[in-house]
Image (tube, rainbow, N blue to C red; front, top):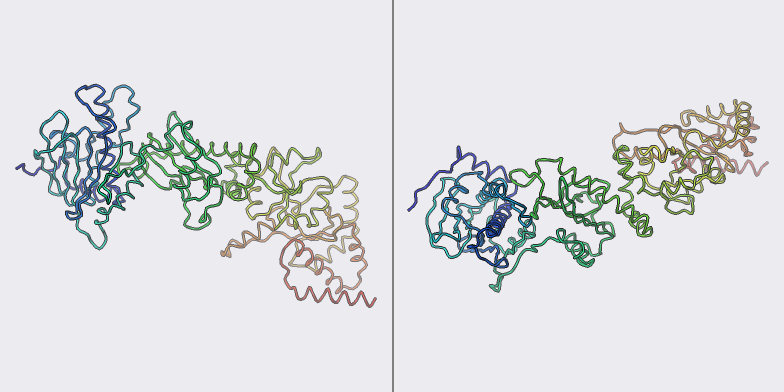
Length: 618
């Protein structure tokens, strides 16, 4: 009987570290052992290219999983290259020795059909997270003698000769006893094995088989990933079925994006734009991100670094053989590689959306109804950093036929004398058109963007300009719509009514910051606008925060139409109290029109009634 040997590491502490610290997820062990089995068959295939004595049918290569509940045993068997006693000693007796890595470096020429998954030589030891004993039975084709490596992961190991038919390796795991914190029996259940294979190893190139309830071998994995097949060989129906099954959607996707990129960093990507908003899209538990694979082995379910927040609606898979994974293959060592992939993916998504906007306008508008807010949020959230990527994808309803328009389309319709891109925030198109400020602008033939969502104005503020044109709110700051003659007349009237305007301002002390004669009103008597800083819409959105320290206030400027009879009526009002009442009524009217709350609706109603009575008596 062979004597027990100690692992060829500087201490048992290293093994304990790998078993208990390197891997954060216990179930990873099955992925690692299956990946090692796949490597063994890859090695057999490559070695057979130069060694005619190695004969096999490629279709016969497979990985077999067997469960014995009575013995609490799980085995993973392959018919790959196998290991001699010396190789068992070198590969398993020396912790963190990577035979796969050495083999990969030794390859000469281009064997593009082979992916060596193992890089660090520690995947085998992940078995000790669930095993109290592991046995590795292995035989190489050219040896008559097979050997077994036996270890409990604590007291070292031993290697003994055994009888074994056929080339290959079988890893036998005797599971640990259950504890309050760990249910190791779960790895004896067929449904759990199927689930783990599907999750982590679905695209291993060789069949992974297991006996089903009828004692017939059942293949558990898909083997060839759809994203690695040639686009020409994939039907639209195959794309759609893959998407619906993989991402739990009952509808076909709106768009399929299949990328095969080669270069400094190579990758495959299969991306989908949903036709509808996912049911949990706005829930707190919704996770953005793409599934990440390396050499067809599952790494992460929602990698958030692969896609921008404003494209979070895209679902899909990215697979790259060039990723630098950490020792446990559970995370990346070099985020720079991921950034390069993400950059290509985001550019491709943008390109596909631009093509849809250009060639399938109706489909794009349906998509925009569902996901346009994400694009506008991207403009705001990046503080202008995403401007070049998103400014030609966003749309707004406008006074031009009340339909969606892009910024480019708006600029193409601008009048020759128009300097700015005009917009107004409102709850609906109807209310936007009814605003007093809209009348004169649209009568002059200027198109107005209708900002109907809370994020819209913030997005335009961050965009700042488009095609060297400034964005200008029609109910904020000065609005230069008059010619020189009209402006001169306004300045004259302002001087003539200076005392009246001061009295009205004093009557509304604490409520308005200024009272002026308006250059933006046509038929309406009055309006209220904000200064050049915070707008009313921004005030409303920011003040929804429960944090009182974040509350803001927009300047309130009451504007009176100099061409409306109301100005003459006010100027002929001699009674100070009546002027105060009129001032308050005009202010409340302006607030209501703007969609802002009035302080005292009851008082406003009483004043209206009193004035009606006075008018009837006169």
